[in-house]
Amino acid sequence: MFETLSNSFSSALKKIRFKDDEKALKKALAELKKSLLKADVHHKVVKELLQRVELDTKAAGIGRDSFLKALQKNLTQILTAPGKQGFVYASKPPTVVLMTGLQGSGKTTTTGKLANYLKLRGKKVLVVAADLQRLAAVEQLRQIAQQIDVDFFGEEDEKDPVKVVNDALKLAREKLYDVVLIDTAGRLAIDEALMEELKRVKEAANPDEVFYVADSLTGQDAVRSAAKFNEDIGITGVILTKYDGDSKGGVAISLAHQIGVPLRFIGTGEKMPDLEVFIPERITNRLMGAGDIESLAEKT
Amino acid sequence: MFGFIKKALKKTVDNIEENVPKKKKYASPEEIEELLIEADVEYDLVEKIVASLPAKVNRVALKNELLFLFKPANAPQADIKPFVELIIGVNGAGKTTTIAKLAYRYKQEGKSVILGAADTFRAAAIEQLTRWAQKLDVPIVATKQGHDPSAVAYDTIAKAKAKNIDNVLIDTAGRLHTQTNLAEELKKIVRVCGKAMEGAPHRKLLILDGTQGTSAINQAKTFHEMVGVDGVIVTKLDGTAKGGALLSISHELQLPILFVGTGEKMEDLAPFDPNEYVDAILDAIFE
Ligand SMILES: Nc1nc2c(ncn2[C@@H]2O[C@H](COP(=O)(O)OP(=O)(O)OP(=O)(O)O)[C@@H](O)[C@H]2O)c(=O)[nH]1
Ligand SMILES: Nc1nc2c(ncn2[C@@H]2O[C@H](COP(=O)(O)OP(=O)(O)OP(=O)(O)O)[C@@H](O)[C@H]2O)c(=O)[nH]1
Ligand SMILES: [Mg+2]
Ligand SMILES: [Mg+2]
Image (tube, rainbow over all chains, first blue to last red; front, side, top):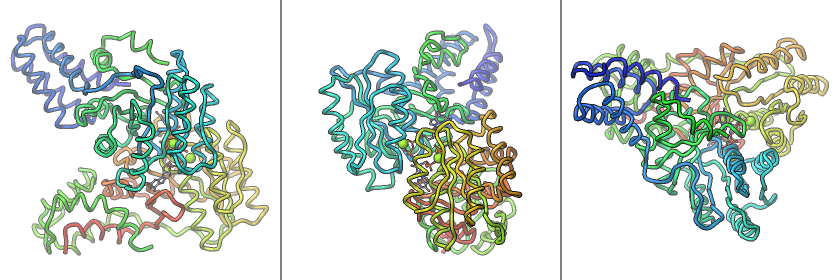
């Protein structure tokens, strides 16, 4: 998933010996900068990261180990935003999750992937079709639910998503579901009418999590649009989809830092198991080539 | 249709106007550079445009410069019947919706249309197109999920021939340009279309998501190498401040942009007019 970045980190590391001087550090930093920018990491985030790494490496005495440690520590910090990591259950079930985002970003598919992920962890999951806009959106979620054998809630001829959400939550409480995942219609942040509707849906759902599902192919635009949704609706996490495309990895690196909301999952394909949990420490370990087994075991 | 593109580019223009607040008669190359970067034109292309400009540029001069970057569209041959169009692109770009928009448009022009649901992969992709067909009141050829998409394409063309239908629009499953295994499937659909009717598909239309900027250019390159693309339709222009990417797409690929999508409804498709487009961007800084 992050091969390109990982390779460039090791080439930066090679520029610096076990014990070394300031000139070597400058070279290593320059190499790092080039590879981060090439990977599409936002330039302000690159600048900040480099400054911190330089300071920390110098403070600990210039050398390969201190450089590695500084990079690992600061990268983890950049990847970490205030908020939760992975999937977090509410203290009192059901945990209610609202899936939001632009048209075609992957909300419905990701709702299925998350349901599958939770089901494999022994949870009783209900997926709710609250996209009443797009043709056959309800049918799409129904088929996905059937495929992964997870319970589905939808009301065929209903027009108001708020009603669907209310009815679904009532059912979820009665039948003691652990998690309720609500799919919503795609919308642009500039579409005021649809954003109003989403606010009403959010009020009705009173969700523990609002996930913003973003298409990683849009590059830095994914960050901008997530920030806008965060302003307007309030989101608790971001999920980047279509990471199997030509995304160079950079958006995932700078996103949390730029908008102050953690990246929680990454979608890497069209199929239900193609979802990876994003835990900053594990990602940095992997980037540093630590070959983290725990994270591999987390793959569904 | 006039004004559609201007409306669609509103976000791009607003963004520019925030940065260049005062309108003027002449602009400096630096100001134009900023304008183009802000509109998300690729930097290589910005450099090229700016390098050829004098120290003071007026509207007409810049307009000519920009118009030069667009590849004109060839009018489709009028005498082919049925005229077969294959719709391709990455996941979620807007293929299925654009088919509905094109079908609506052809119907408005008094032509008969048939749809082929050859996305047999995605959950409820067939149902989505079927509901559009009902809404538009046009026939559709569809099978079950998992069936061979080429067979659907073949049957659709055969039916169009039998029923003397003017236009055939064939949907395909979304595929990322990086998924080489799906390339073969697409090539096969193209081949089979040719078996159903000599010369078909007459146009392979690539749907690009307007919010995807540089990735869209890579997509277009790969799809073009894969099966050859005859024209591009850029969707979701209503949601992007990246309208400038159209310039890069047209210039880099030498492919004509035929239509732009400006919303989710079947009417939300406008023929792309480079003149109107360039004017909409220039309005942001020039009087
Ligand atoms: N390759 C790849 N495709 C994906 C991924 N996630 C979703 N998709 C595909 O992207 C397309 C759109 O996904 P949907 O789940 O329908 O998107 P959506 O956000 O629900 O779309 P709307 O409801 O129309 O707004 C489908 O073809 C999915 O199969 C991913 O991580 N990788
Ligand atoms: N705002 C806006 N939304 C659009 C436009 N074109 C399509 N959409 C929306 O984008 C989403 C995806 O459109 P689809 O037509 O299903 O895309 P697709 O390429 O067929 O998707 P897959 O078959 O899953 O690969 C839907 O929610 C559409 O309503 C457009 O021009 N503007
Ligand atoms: Mg959906
Ligand atoms: Mg489709």
